[in-house]
Length: 453
Image (cartoon, rainbow, N blue to C red; front, side, top):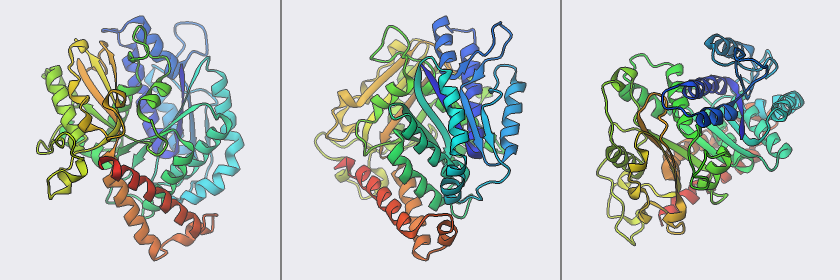
């Protein structure tokens, strides 16, 4: 089944082509690739517009931004890759941005351009023989990606009520890229919680550390960060055997993913941990074993560490029958991470030998979710993106409590003094709307905080 990608705003239009580059290169690689793997990958992300072997595959993607420059560069870069391209009429842009104002994107640009954007979506959907759903990539910090992206997601839910929708959100640096980024993040999450099936979040601070400490990049750019995000996304979205369909590659990538992880509508926040990740130079001199990969990835999940370097091995699971929240420790940071559900994706040589027993312990999960139901495992012997063996966990857990709580606190402190609120009011977001959004996110925080009880 096919995914329709929506690249929304500057961030979405930078992450999107990196993801398509990864899956295109991985799907075309001859080494260890079966025809069924290549065909499944191709169907998910690309279509063929013309007959003949020389025609470039066309991405199943819609590009939307209120400024033309990023989209222009994205279209040009894709064509120059020589492996794939975007459709000739797959993008929408204007000449005026949203000024980093969520309300401008949601209340002004959204309604104004709804018909044009949704017409592009409809055309792309009609070209899918079997639609799995929509994968929307956007930032939560700016105006267009967050505001317009949220509006487009709501339109998708209204127009395609039975389709799956997964939003990939890039979380801003804690030190700040935009002065009102915390407002924009709270508004984005609270509204998306009503219309999206799940929110897969990447934190810029975490990915920056991966680039610095694991990839050994000295001068880190947004391109470097986007490549890491794309690698992690590809490690999940590329074909794998699911427990529901062990004889052939899972045909419904979003449906299988969401069925594995989103078991309750109150819990929609997903985070991703991938191992190993390193520079190409280091990779060629490295070897990996499944026992080591499983041991490290399990501890990353327990300790809520999204990279292999600096794993805190002091964090332990609570003794049987003792909730994580009351684990004997005066340091809250040492409390283990409690999950609603986890999806383990294993790729590479001798994958059947990987022992996943450590991820099946009930102590990893909230008391009302049996471990047998909470853990799902996908496998394929096909290596991914140059890594002979690799493992990924997509986790619906307490992983995102800290950045979420920090963002809400900062946003509330600004709102208490009504800083910049008038900029949102003039575009149609009232103070009551802000209060409703704070209430929604506070409830999400409370729900995840109580998982360990």
